[in-house]
Image 1: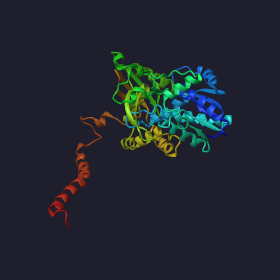
Image 2: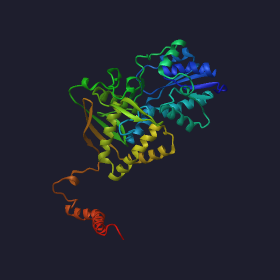
Image 3: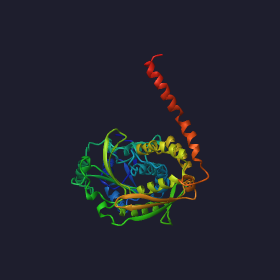
Image 4: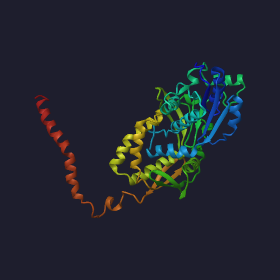
Length: 409
């Protein structure tokens, strides 16, 4: 261990891992620990963390409200890209890490700290996401990752360590699953979820109600878009953070946005998680609906071809990479005319698009109608089809000749 470390800035949540890490850093590095907690909409009061961090041994704690910055500069750009990792995961945990890590580096520079630290395990994705951001913003930074150094092998070991050192934690051996919550989602991992056959339990419902408890009547929601970003819900304009919170409320009350999946971690193993992303699910569907009438076909198809790669970059932790930044510029350029309103029907876990309109719409009934119109001559389709069929006809004709020769010259 580097005994030259004098001061460390720790990404601190107040949970089991980071509570233990404060004490462990002091014991093993003999250093000063400054805790940093970001309020990204966890839905809980963070002010008690001040007393808890100091009692555990931290010399100081930063608690900062970053909800609006999180929504506007991280969640909304990702939603403009329609990013889904492996077709299902809306990247709620992934997108929070670059903001936390960036602010952590800023605090380290301001405090003259020698190192930064985090509570991510050596098996997961978060260690990569934190550290790629650290190195992108401060290439010579010293990183301390306790899970890769200490001899504590499980969360049960951490609970025992906390008991021995009088560290107050809420985790128990009977309920050891790990959660991560912010304004976009909540995730559940570990515990009984490590068996992919086991159904999640009711104590794993937070942002979305169980479908069977959702209202028996559908709820209709309208979302207005400007330049690819949601600007209003049901006609009421809101800031990005408040809009995302309102989307969570409406969708969550109707059981929308819950997924149970097995995903492929960047480090190589498969992992099972349960995610609730009610507002993100609503806004993803609404954005797609407005795009459907405002984006040119080939532009949409080209952009959609980039979505898996974009989502992969966010999931892997490459937010501050030149390729993600380049892709963002292209994607954002496609969003200039993505303006309009989507109407959605929320009912028992379903989020169904039932209407869309826009002053920038490329959809016009007179072009698509089966009735009489003046802009499209149906007879022109014959030449269009024959030209597109030319290579198929040539292939068939030459194929017959080749078969007769048995494939010989």
